[in-house]
Image 1 (tube, rainbow, N blue to C red):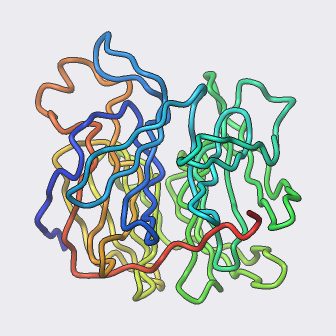
Image 2 (cartoon, rainbow, N blue to C red):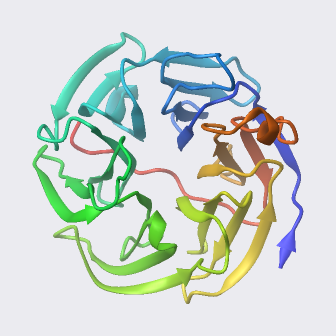
Length: 303
């Protein structure tokens, strides 16, 4: 089951908390964030949004608070979810416009994993920056008219938002539960129902983090803490396992001209010098050649 694809370093600049890999097919470039802005030891930098074309130079935009996730928007803009809400950001002008703050009553929460469904709605979770954080997060749906609805409360670390190629199946996890759930998804109403367990990662010491779906309908899951990426078939069978050179992968995206490169963001947040010594690539962004291909990201249609 374990495979050993070619693994390249796409970008060596370390992230404290690399997250939200998104392939921008319009520019043929990868977007991702350093959500926390904390590097090893005493080296500190602000949270940043990154963009890089294959073979190109790294671009970075500093941010003034903790970042959670990104999505594509119209006219080259980016939808950005952070500690203060959800915003439209134009990298060309650096203009930022806030669309909504889902949690003005929870100042110690930030937005976390987010993704668009196949109809262009944006789903995003929240988590607490404080410990204990159990049950202090939630899951939201941002519609194209900027109306936002709380879908579920009392979550801890919402993650793994993804949809099947036809958009009729939604995937999601609350990471500490260690289960990725599958739902029937209503294309018109944007509602999820009939939850079932797609795969239970309880046998592994890590937790499921970010996820993406390939063109064959299989879910790829970054397992934070084990240094592994898993591929799960739509019927819940684990059929591939990739071992990475660092223990904390966070998010996945297919990209490249033929969507046949799997980009993986990683983290080094809260790792000691002793833990980092055998993991020089902790926090780097990796590129894997795998026997699968992905699909273009759907743009958020409310912008």
